[in-house]
Image 1 (spheres, rainbow, N blue to C red):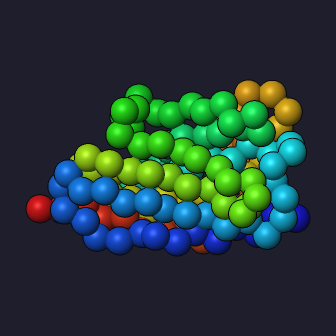
Image 2: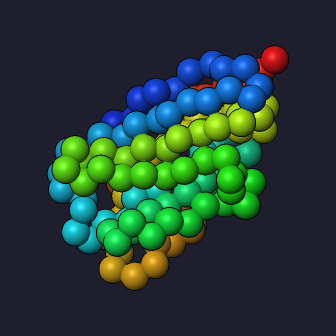
Length: 124
């Protein structure tokens, strides 16, 4: 069982930056994929970025070049560095984990551990 707790959500202006954090209750370094997902009002949950146990990363086209996913295994913490934020990035951001040995799945349906979510609002 892995408990995940996100923090760092806030309201920022267009073009601003924000870093989200996700603290894990257990060691997820060895065999867990970790990911960030988001859900805007009235829309389905979508993948933002994932990172596997070898620190191989994948991200959605909509955030490439702007968002970076990082994991600090010693601190059991996952991060999402977000730059050049746009109104379309407004959503609740969720941290998730799943035990996978291969490439991390992109679909949120493959992840079985979730945090409570943190709100990110981007406006002018």
